[in-house]
Image (cartoon, rainbow over all chains, first blue to last red; front, top):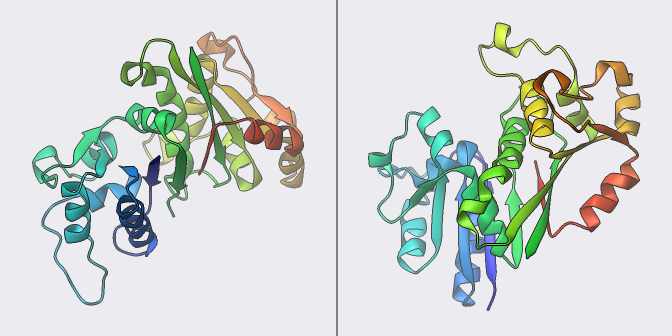
Length: 119
Length: 137
């Protein structure tokens, strides 16, 4: 089995790009691959707890929390989060917060990198 | 000894969104990636500007005065200072009616030893082909 690193830079609300990334991560985990997800820029908001579900918007908190419980590694950019007023105590349990070099190190050891840019 | 080459390709214009800034900050983060790696492992970054991305490379940016944020010019100079290879697509520079003297070609005042390179797109393609991973911003 391989390792997939997915970099996500898109908004949690306002585009369906993160939904695609999370579905891809789920599929990879189901096939037994290791998955690292890096959340940067607006993508960091995916790692914030307390997301309220509305039918008009996709809701990813439960899916991503289950993914982490199942062994996926989800890590958010600390600087991007702090710049958005989103602090360590707001992070979903089990998620990581690191600097950007963590993403590059994850890419280093990945068999494939899928970098999904922002808006 | 294991080095992995990563190409950071920027085709977004500056300031309209955060994207090109994130490309630069992630590329510069390669300077500290070793703390997460084993001895002898490292990342070799290549930063390339194509399409509207070449507009990030304009000299005399005023974002500090206008927006109160660091300029992408200063980030490009920091990339040069840290010996990151910076490539700028010459066809796209011409397409935007720009000339070399309008483009950030060095960071001499910071003490950088290397300069940006205006290169044909084919050179950037070759860099991508020889990279282990491509991060497209």
